[in-house]
Amino acid sequence: MRILSTLFAGLLFGTGLILSGMANPAKVQNFLDLFGTWDPSLAFVMGGAIMVTAPGFWFVQKRAKPLFHDAFHLPTRTDFDARLIVGAATFGVGWGLGGFCPGPAVTALPLGAIGTLWFVPAMLVGIVVAKYATTSQRKTLAV
View 1 (tube, helix red, strand yellow):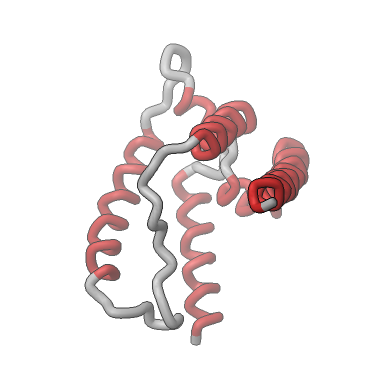
View 2 (tube, rainbow, N blue to C red):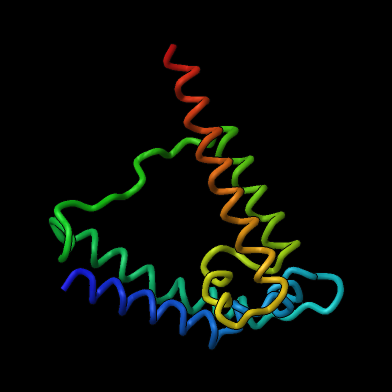
């Protein structure tokens, strides 16, 4: 049941990304172009997502444990450090330049657009480099 619920959630998420236009990099870049060809429609998509997610988080946090797992895995840190700021800035710059963030990029991959075929491998390389850099940094700090 856990695998089926995960598959359903992924398909629902991907369908929402495609229907909302978030898998279209031109639409995302127009949303980010505040002083040019600004397209506010994604603000409504994000607002709708928040309106669905906020009550969902409230409901879920009332439960003792998830339906298909032993425990919740929620973030516990509340501080802002350099790693968070640099990571968020890198994500934002990549999103602005490429018009994709990871979810919509993977969703758009089967469409075979040239930009997606460049973005997804670059994203995967970035993930591996970040993981390696973080692991090396932790080993250095532990010594």
